Length: 107
Image (cartoon, rainbow, N blue to C red; front, side, top):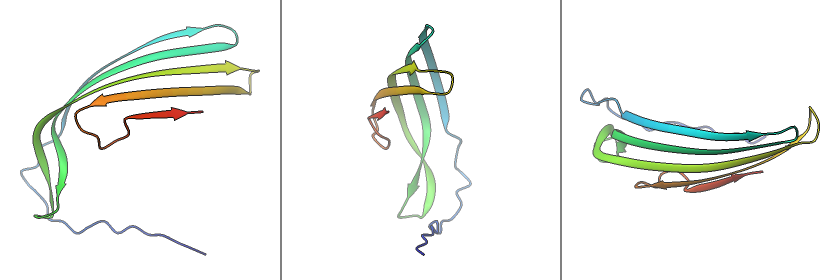
């Protein structure tokens, strides 16, 4: 038997830590018929006071920059019957910061 555990790093609290401010706008356009579904979506997000871990001081701090994020996605579904369907989805992100994937695919 193999077991993996995670122990978070020890850190000191930061009483000056502010909440992250996130402004987001999303929209979707969807087409349906009896056997098919297609969804196109768009998201625009602005993040102020994001939170990062400062390894030197061993505490969480606010990053004082603004992060802009745009994402588009398209999803297609084919319904064989009420219990079975095939799904494919693709997304592409455009952002200033690349901590998360820039694109992805779901099959």
